[in-house]
Image 1 (cartoon, helix red, strand yellow):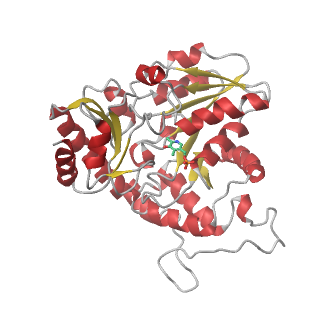
Image 2: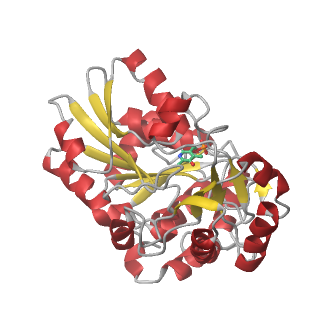
Length: 380
Ligand SMILES: *Cc1c(COP(=O)(O)O)cnc(C)c1O
């Protein structure tokens, strides 16, 4: 069931890729755990590492429908999805352009792995799309962005970057993890490949590690040809759990969008709080672009500065759990200076707004007033 069937996201989240159980006429898709399938009469045998077993196909269909993509491929982690997609598009001697505000794991992987394969890269400030065009060389093949970014929720103009890539015949790739397929569909804006850490909003319950790439059938075939070598496939049971999670993703993310906006507005009004970063606030520098390219909402991620001791504030929270990762139904909070950005020097951190007072909140689906009360009592 593709997006062209005209159903809304909410309906697709429940029905796309849900095959039911034809044998016993059950409502939900069964789990097919086989790793051994008959090979007669098929050109490509079913095999877990070929990304083609039944539960793998079901969940991929649902995700592709939700991202308005022709096809997709589901991985055992976000990094497997991202790195396999990037490397499948590049070879020795090529050059790729990356936005400088990237998920730490992606940044480290580029810096550590790409030079070892003779692939050159440039980091540019994503705030101005023209920076990507200026960095293009004759060997450039890929432009890669991430928006909203971590942890200060910077916004990159997706349509403008996609247009630059098209004009120069380059492949554009985006990490759409923070927005989720509910809020932002980059393929509609001209992006070639959408990647996700499904560990976050797609799984949504802080209990699954997975990833995905969504694109045209032609590009997914190119990614698949590398993916079967690198491995990184997702087992049947987890595929089934992800399919189950996706059925409530739209509801979860809508509640998270509402909660995050309510929290951001409250935080702006509390004099004990310094800067508040949320693209849904009208004074956020990327607000106008975010409003245009995130029709589903501004997301459940926000960051803010605690004027007093941020570590003590986090220790005082009762409802909001201190934890890395994000996108779960429960609200979690981290100190970027101590986690995602710990490898940077204090001066480097300061330059991108990651102060010791900055905390990053992944807003869950709890009642917004309960979350606000928890923050108030922790500040007192
Ligand atoms: C978590 C995350 C990743 C990496 O995903 P894993 O599932 O941990 O491999 C990539 N990008 C973003 C934005 C993330 O938050």
